[in-house]
Image 1 (cartoon, helix red, strand yellow):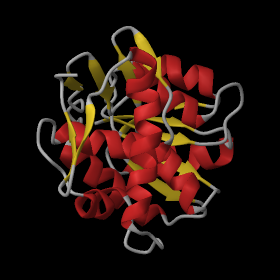
Image 2 (spheres, rainbow, N blue to C red):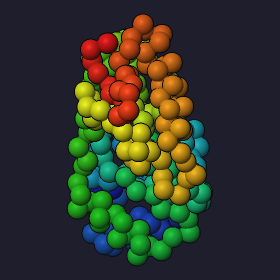
Image 3 (cartoon, rainbow, N blue to C red):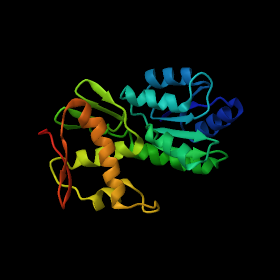
Image 4 (cartoon, one colour):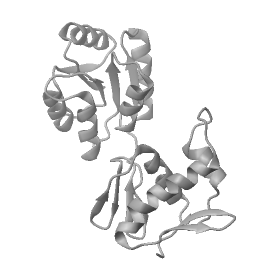
Length: 224
């Protein structure tokens, strides 16, 4: 199994490489984001251990670029940032796992083996409803040739509606699947975000694809 470690703390990178080689892995090192991205692009690696804070190009940008290029090598991100939003950002951009520093080598090895057992993830399916397209991997939405910028919540809402295109989806279902149970929410919040979506995916294009079904919910349709 071939691994790439992209870590600018050379002492840590060397120690990790030594331990992983002792456990039977072939390991290559890179100490900045640009070099790491180039090696990940052109090397045949089974997994990449990628630090977030790197010189020249951050780990976030490295994994974002790999996924945009349809490179689905498993990525385990390392970071001293332990905030939930930091971890969420890494995973949303395409990392497969996230480990905060300081960490146990035993835990890292277990996480790495779990990634390798899963193998390379399949590319997420691009969703299409008429000329409206949503790419979960790239986090991109477009109508025809025009890109549409959505907030994270708007993206999640549209993604759920596109998974259930041509079917009526209730406000309660949208609330359950797009908002977490810990958030202070009400079904009226769904109406607000449906309005935001319409102003972005329909109004500028003269479309009415996001329909209200009175007394039932909402339906996203290709017939607009």
